[in-house]
Length: 443
Image (cartoon, rainbow, N blue to C red):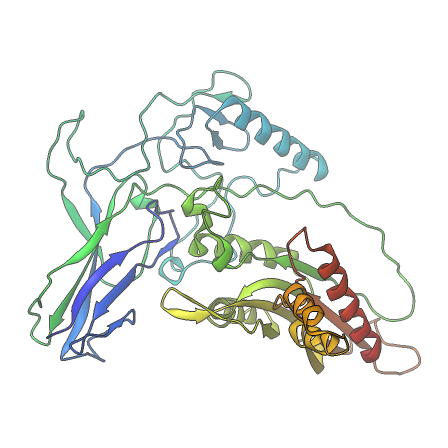
């Protein structure tokens, strides 16, 4: 029996412009076992490999969509910020946010209009971003009906899969244009308003299709990426002492893909929970603060290796990482989340690293308790697999930042994500206390 494709799916049906689409493909080998590996022509299985193709529909639904909720049609536009909105409440909230930001920046409209992205998918790195305020790639006009907003022309918009290719609602066969031949595909601005189709088939060395034929899916219409809301940060006073130097620290929970589920966040559309979409916005926000030290929580083990380590490494950071101990099977591999500390290589050097597993601390504590039932109850209460990561860093010489006494400038940084259940406050308190006792011994 030759290699065959069992199924091909996508974790959400609504592609976002500029975001990578990576299908989940399951194949069956000749020996009856299944795999999710990418079987290429250079590394065939049973003399066969997988051939991928992406297509764009000829039909196009030209429509203005909300900049905040891109799954919804736009009915209003802020002509100052060039953003589109689906309801009056959406427009009002965005207007207030825009005005607060404008006041906070002294009237400078920073961040509005064209922005040079801090990270682009490899497929789009050679594309120019242009200048000035970008026109909406999905319709809409600039005929204002007031000083602050205008209403785009009425239209119909449906983000779900729509395979009709005819005009005026006529049911005509859809025409498709091939746009990609790799497993992954980065949707572009040109795809907005179009359907995308993915096909995968097992072929032999001569290109002959194997048993089972093609497998694939059709997505909904591609929508433009929304603009994340700005954070209005509150400045805090700092001490400009003569001794020692200054450094900045950022802490950020990135929400591991394992936990970004529709059951946990039923009010969030599936495309917004997709890791390929979220990672771009997370990286953009983290990098813009330009902190010397980054403490990240819920960093999924495969995302640390495949994304954060490389992308933040390009920006001068090096890292240490501690993951939890109980891995789970997801997307064809075993993964779990953990804590990561990134620091700038030109500011600090790593002296020592300490890893804290609260499960081990719980086992040690329970041993001192009497009675088997008490021990069992305590273990059930405390064994939550949370971890902490501690590093000792030495500050490198910086202008105007040397210790007058000539001593080494050492810094201890701890990063943890204690148990999240609000009904287990005693467990949270115990984990925090355990970490502080460990820090006392180190510092």
